Length: 369
Image 1 (cartoon, rainbow, N blue to C red):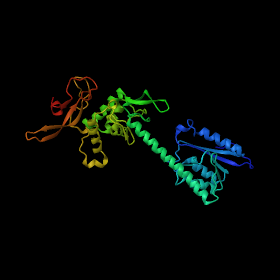
Image 2: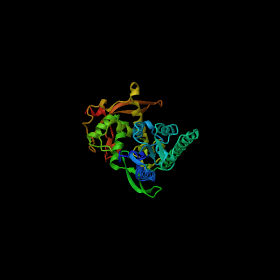
Image 3: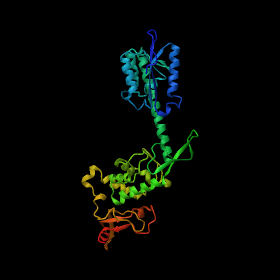
Image 4: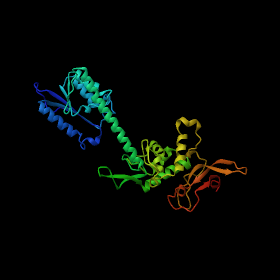
């Protein structure tokens, strides 16, 4: 942005400020206000006039390529038009931390006739091969520091997750984040997860209907929307929301963050391991690439006549129809499996409300009544 019109006798300066995370904007020693103050004081001491300022908030100089940084590209366009004389940063690593790229970005500005200065390290000149070498070594060190920082963060994340602690971020449906007295290394209270009683029952029902009744993710989403149940973001459920839930092994009692998994945590278990595995098997069988091999019937194609129109006489729950696999052990010891349509009282199976009736009813018997 333009701050003031520079007189022709004044050296025109463009400043670039950058922080890697949004949390650094005003909370750390390398935040934007600190960088801005240092650059203004430095320019004033040199008699320079700052006419442009660019800030990158939450942009990693190690992970994000220069070509993908909008502010840096805008500065390059301004440099090509000779709109300023000096590019000023707090430290040169604000330009980036990629050893295979940033040294050449800095040198590009110098080749355009732009002097590049740091309030800490001074001016980067290219009068000899030694200058090129020092320029490269500087960003090689910055890249190495970023890699070490990344390792430290990943190691700490792994330790936190393996200890069964919540890392922050989006809370999975079925849980809630609450303060339980745990603090971080700075002594600040941090939240942990616990099962939300209402949402936990909904999660159990979802897995049961998929694993035992053959429901599709689309059917589950429609069911939830008909009940006006929304995601933690306040949105209606979509098929992809349900699929993410079905694939989240954390519901079986584990804290999971990326490739890190904790040990079993009983108080976080919503779904039995066997139910989760059965649901996952059905999800995998229904993938598009397995369409020809699919062997699981969708609930909408079950052969029950009264699915959705029958209610359990014991607890009042609507009975759903699905294909059930019965196993019989024959006299010779072999096991015979038979798929048969049945009606199911999910309230009995999930224990969501008292029911002294049976859970499964043979469709051939009920439909004849």
